[in-house]
Amino acid sequence: MEPIRFASLDEVRDAAMRCRRCRLWEGTQGTVFGEGDPHARLMIVGEGPGQREDEQGRPFVGRAGQLLDQVLEAQGLSRQSVYITNVVKHRPPQNRTPLPDEVATCLPILRWQFYFIRPKVILLLGLSAVHALLDPQATMGRVRGQLVERSGVWMLPTYHPAAVLRNPGLRVHLEDDVALARKKLEELAAQQ
Image 1 (spheres, rainbow, N blue to C red):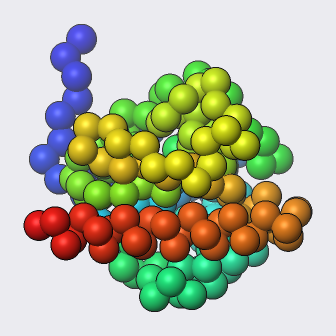
Image 2 (image 1 turned 90 degrees about the vertical axis):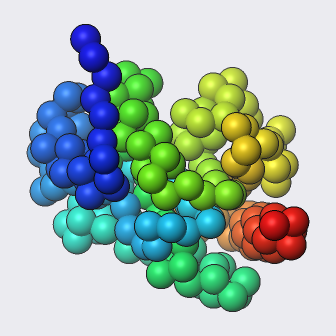
Image 3 (image 1 turned 180 degrees about the horizontal axis):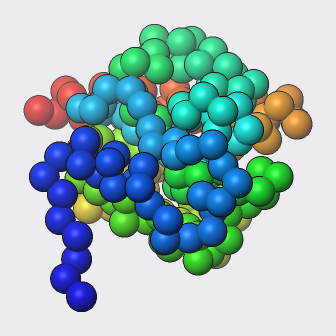
């Protein structure tokens, strides 16, 4: 079977909106593709949509999203200046962690998002994103806050804002990692 080719991010979005390749779309209100600057240097990848995201069709709009917005703004970044998406594009039932086959089904869409957006730094929020894109055996304690270069893109694992809401002591780590991502972007811009 010949691989699917897309000519634009809009074509990728259209394909994701029609996707029924895994069971996640059942019982959801729709697809949560991603949003933000389609030429962003910083891309943020979370796990999957929650209930609020499913209802609104936008990533990170619930309490975790509000926290993420605050942390970004503290670093002089805005939701509009980055691109925010998730590993899977449909809400898993009861907000459970996406299963490996569900992640594998959605990864081609995410990779096409990378291809068209061309970020310089990708902030990986939570273990689902880390396992899907960096290391399936990683623990957050081992990889958090460490920049890893893959094919010319720097990936930075950190805690998901939902984990920070459950354990407020983790907020300092999320804040530090967003600051590190901003610093890396500045460093890369200075090298150009």
